[in-house]
Image (cartoon, rainbow, N blue to C red; front, side, top):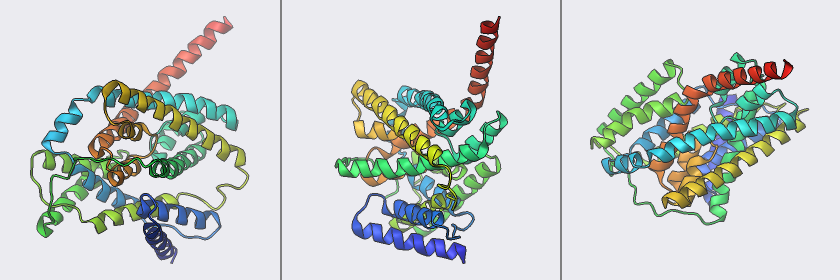
Length: 347
């Protein structure tokens, strides 16, 4: 009952938003509707696997844009991808320290709550270093909510639409090819999930769809209703993260997280604009590529607004990989450095 209620409410909200012409209606509508109902106290939730299915569909759709020409173009700006990933870590530390001071948290919790990784992954990593996993997960979920609410709306209000010439490698729908494509990407997603990799179904689907497209093995396009269904399931799943007591007794924490996320968005936008000025690439694309949102959500935004889907995808995939590999060892190195400084000061 709770699953069906969430799906019905999410579907109604998505359809309503599509009629109103809101940006990314099939993700934002379900997200805010389900989150609002849950915070109001109703026991509804997306069914198990909704997030993974949504990520699987979205990851497969994004991978179809990586034609040989796109691969060459993205490879030519590898230094921008690396700079964006490093900057994401820096911003995470800066805003994490600010969050710790504003919310009265320890620095470890503040940092892992602010580094733009997945909620589950950052909570798990943070717990290893003594962070409060519940606060980390809550802050990460709120970060996604705020960025997803603000960025597409801001782009729509400013009229920032691209005129991308990027098109998926596959242009026609083929039932047999579609079945083969989705089976292969689902298998990769399950493997990545089994290996406990973050955003496993996004990265797993990309790991299959990108080589197929780059090799010009164009099996099938993804029908728009299927793409909308992926956004819808992801929106329902994101909305289900919010508990009825989310705002109760935590106003200072929520306000501090919101302020830290806004600071992160501003710093990231300035960095994206700086890279655009230096490289000559579209500013709106690079701002979206450096935005501290989730990989699926930001890439959906790029897709809907036609703002450099492959480049935005490459930025966020690079960030996820770098954060996965570097967050824990870098935090350990910083902590050792701080202990050494404290020891020198005491002597």
